[in-house]
Image 1 (cartoon, rainbow, N blue to C red):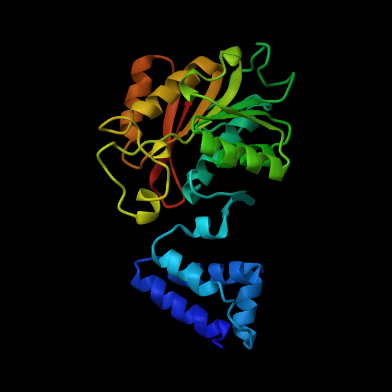
Image 2 (cartoon, rainbow, N blue to C red; image 1 turned 60 degrees about the vertical axis):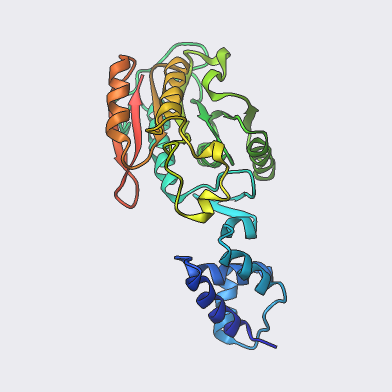
Length: 305
């Protein structure tokens, strides 16, 4: 019987040959999944030796070599301390989106502190019914929520939020609802078109977050994990420059936000200047700025209504 150590070594080689950039990590994660243990325990078992490889491990490695996403094989994606269920039909959350959450938390905290720490400057306090500030918790809406990664991270880290999230795709919406229920978070997750979302909240929302589809329509992703497995509805921005849907989301955010409310929206690393110009041209925004993710690439626009 093949030992776990030998199997992981061979799996690393197979995955590297298949073009998987994170081959050593993926081989170990799949071993942990097959064993039903945490990755740290699988790593310990590799060191101590004497452990046989589970029979299903080879099939998992073969699927990953065919570039099925690791998260689809394990059924999990880790995001800011949360473990989300993911699979076919829902966009797998990426580490760079954690920057968006950090910036949104800054904006949320500023609602209750007269603007201290706000990444785009002081946030006006609102007396509008439903708005956050001194008289109540912040109201946050997440457009294009997908698996719910952004909305659930914000709620988990700021439990007093009034949080709502909307997703247009029924399958992705089902994943988000399942994640919400498993995590036990009080977030209203709705099925519908973000471009017309929440008419009852117009002019009352404190922060709108959004990771919209933004890939230009004619730029098919190179990575098979993205091209063949992420849903097209979550990828393509609806125009040659990929900005039709992001700008539609910004337009809806401008309607939902109270004066002084904040939009926090992700974009492709080359789209920041165009988005900033488009926001400025509407006359609806001020203090708009672009922010880099942890890799140093421009990633998130923050603007104040």
